[in-house]
Amino acid sequence: MIRDYLKECMLFICCLTVAYFPLGLLGQTCLSGGITFSTQEAIDNFSANFPDCNTIVGTVTIEEASSGAIENLAGLSAIISIGEALVINQNTALSSLEGLNNLTTVGGRLTISNNAILENLQGLEALDTIVSSLRISNNTALSALTGLRDLHYLFQDLSIENNKSLNNLKGLDSLRHIDGQVNISSNPRLTSLDGLDQLQSVGNIFQLYNNPLLQSLNALAALQSVGSDFIIDENQRLPTLQGLEALESVGGFLQIVNQPILNNLSGLRELKQVGGLLQVFNNKLLSSLSGLDSIDHKSFNSLALISNPNLTECSVKSICNYLGETSPVHSISGNRSGCLTTAQILAACKRQGQNSQPGQPSDILLFPNPTKGKVFIKGRTIGGAQVVLYDTAGRKISTRIVAEQTFNIEELAVGYYRLRIFAGDRVFNKSLIKLD
Image 1: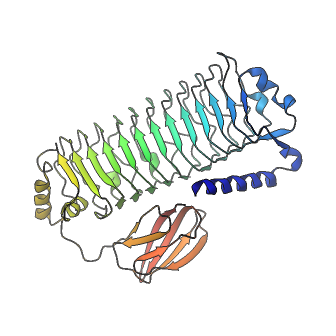
Image 2: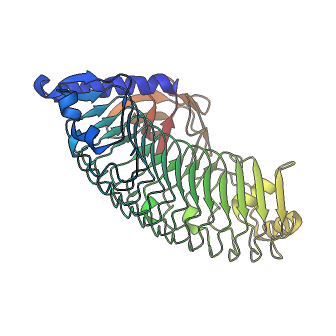
Image 3: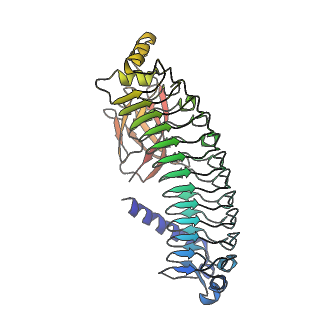
């Protein structure tokens, strides 16, 4: 179970903490029931009230009892680890997180919300690991995430919502894999996703919703897989999906909806797998589905092409082959002539020869991805091929042989792997996420 995995991770992190800090610095654990700081006095007196305590076992809450009651966190400089959650919420006079400079690990979630004059996250530079989720929301003055530069491990969700002054995500530059969901929503001044440049995989849903000034996805150039749904919805200034060229796999729905100036899908040209519904809805300027050509039509299970008033070109390979199957689940309406009905699309497919099935494709598809163990290979017959797996540091982990178009990684630890598949004179480089 994922909960057991996270417990093991936390135990490992705690062991690292003990190994790294000399016993004199490590001090003692305390406050198994957690602690709430609601006044400046309580913060200033922490070291005196709890001498030698720098590892708090329970949840730490920093929330003012009355307006302006907390102005700084300098009195918390002894804390190096929190076993459960850290909640920094509803502080009207807190302008800085300086004072948390020695905090390396949060064993639960980290929530930073409703702090009216907090402009950045400086003070969290030592934070390396959040075992649960990171939520940053409703911080009116927050214009930058600087301070999180050493955050390497986020085992559950990332949520960045309704921060009215935030214009990019710089500060998250060390994140390569997020095991849970990513929700970036309702940030009215966000113009780019700069800061997510190293992100390679999202284990669950990835939602980009209602960021009205978002103009570019170029910062997602390293993103290769989304484990569940990928939702791009109501980003009113986003003209293209350029930046998603490395994306190969979406494990659930792919929804491209309510994008008023989106004019092409070419950024998805390397996408090979969609595990659920493929939906293109209410994109006023979109005229072509070119860019969806490489998707394996057998990987998605339903199709919706609805209310795209300028969409005239739908006869791309993936769509032609899907609609050519027996009884495909689909809804097509409200587009322009050429994409108005199933019959129109199939007629265009026939004219272009797009619904003919090639003999031996040049690439392969791993499915499902993410997986809990068994992996199927689609696209080419490569029985007997050798599969070599590497971890994120490039170390060789194991080798196995493909039998009947499948192989199994059930015994491997949860995480992200690189694969090299040797099939005759061909070598295929792929990525794979192992789930619990």
